[in-house]
Image 1: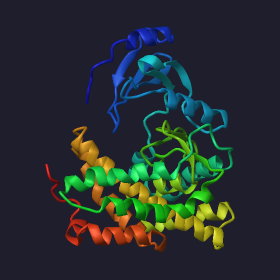
Image 2 (image 1 turned 135 degrees about the horizontal axis):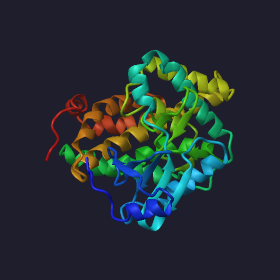
Image 3 (image 1 turned 90 degrees about the vertical axis):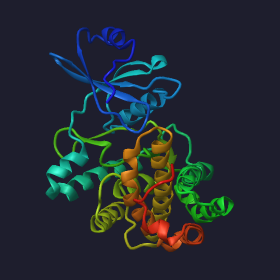
Image 4 (image 1 turned 90 degrees about the horizontal axis):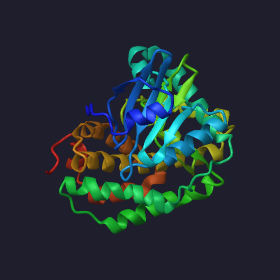
Amino acid sequence: MDLTIPPGTEAFLNKAGWVGATIEPLPGDASFRRYFRIRRSSGTAMLMHAPPPNEDPQPFIRSAKWLESYGMRAPIILAEQADDGFVLLEDFGEVRMREYLDAWPQDEEEVYRYAIDALLKLRGLPPGPFTGYTLAEYQREARLFIDWFIPARALYVDSRSWTNAWEEALSPLLGRQRPGVTVLRDYHAENVMLIGGLEKQGLLDFQDALVGHPAYDLVSLLQDARRDVSPELEAKMLDYYLDHIGASGTPAGEDFLADYARLGAQRNAKIVGIFVRLWKRDRKPRYLDYIPRVWSLLERDLAHPALAPVAAWFDANIPADVRATLGGTFEA
């Protein structure tokens, strides 16, 4: 863990009224952002350092303020100096959904219901002031699989038919994501904080929010790259969501489940590419350990008829032995 304090930190904290506070570095994530817990006798805060040019804190600030304005539990912005990458935030504490469930697995179903309640509330809000999730963006993300996973396994594939397969698979959902909902895009058990009771859940890591399909964040939560969610729990939570939007057992519900599978496959293919990129480009090999889980989720999604064009591409381009040994050695 990098223990260095970024230049200008103390001056920013002093200006924000936190003179003499202690600065405690925290473990990093998959980005160039760094986090610090700021302590003083009267309380704590979180400092995010997201310095340009690799990061830009403005999208986080904009998203946090929008979410908070509609009663969503994003951290309150206490101070900001965006040009230098500094944002001082409300401290949600140290209890993430993932670690809580590791300790109290008997509460799993209840905790997930509350996490889905947040998505149901988000669904009821007007779309936020964010860019729309277009087919071009879905394709750009899916391309990460081709750009990073394929060369890492020294494979040769038909990349043009990859694009065509995704266009055929994803096009049916585009009309159903209008007018759209705010999509946080990385909504999972490591980005949900429990801040006093299972129902009081704080949101993190929403700086890449777009306006898109309501199934996207649901599949991000229930097909978690970093935590096992059983198929039984996934099915229960999907039923819970569909019951609350009045779509259970209806054609609209079947369309939603098909779109859920489409977005699950797209997201999981993207994540495989990102995790390889984190290893190859950013020297973070620990993310390779998650790939077998993500691949298993991808295979489940590909079994849905809505993914037939993409499933056919995998059958034609990724050998069975490669698909069976995703925890194996990658080419240097």
